Image (cartoon, rainbow, N blue to C red; front, top):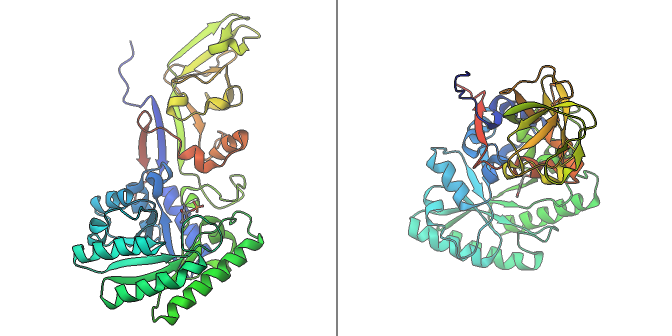
Length: 381
Ligand SMILES: *Cc1c(COP(=O)(O)O)cnc(C)c1O
């Protein structure tokens, strides 16, 4: 009888040494700018607190998140680094964020009013980054709304209730570095920044995500905001090995059952695959409820027992079946790697994204961490 193992059934292994390495690569790409590591969406599924600490150790001096909850989570973990939060409702309560020294993006007069009221309650000025819509038509103030926003900012600053830290925006086409919209967005940002300077503010200016950090040094301005590359995934989708980035996440699970089945037996729901010969099948308990897209049925392989082997039949909610042919080198309890850095021949998140017609961002943020155990390795001392 086997003794019980403490190795998890299913695991997202996150290498924090890779995060530090990637941040150092980004620092080298943007030596003159400050670096904000974007850790929204729980660090793109990698763990916001752990990644934030690793990124700061690797040379980041700012952190970026989407929501007030994400910002509060980092502050509650004792992370005191400059931190920007950028997507809010105008009726959010900003009091705790201002009190915790969280910088807030402001895209409208209504948001500014809410932040200013929170500053009064918190008893300290709110640090704001005025967001210009420079051509993405998502967040930010349109050029026509900019003077009004500056009027209100001037009044709030005169009262000592806001400090205008930055004027900023976000790129729509940074993954196409020579797209003409990048220059157009940069010009509009600079116009918005100059208008703020004419009102007596001295804000910094920031625009670049990971793609622009790596490919458009002319758009780095004072600070860059890489996200995906912090996690080792190339924003331009170049194959692993063509860049210095190291993917940080490995998704793996352990074989629950190995058995021989005779030729002609159907496998999994719908019998979409039938054994063409007597074969050995391995059952691996990771399915679409864990973040393995069902659309990868019949279109994916795992690294198991030293070889890439096909997942056969449909991906189920909880499990997949792997065809191991004669079964050499495959035992119950072995680890099947679903995706990882690619260094040992395993598939990558990029491979999954290519197969699915999506981007690797969606793959790593799609691991379901209520079922998959996330483990961090490589933390700095
Ligand atoms: C997500 C995000 C980033 C980071 O984008 P990547 O493509 O992952 O580098 C930067 N800025 C803003 C405003 C974002 O929402």
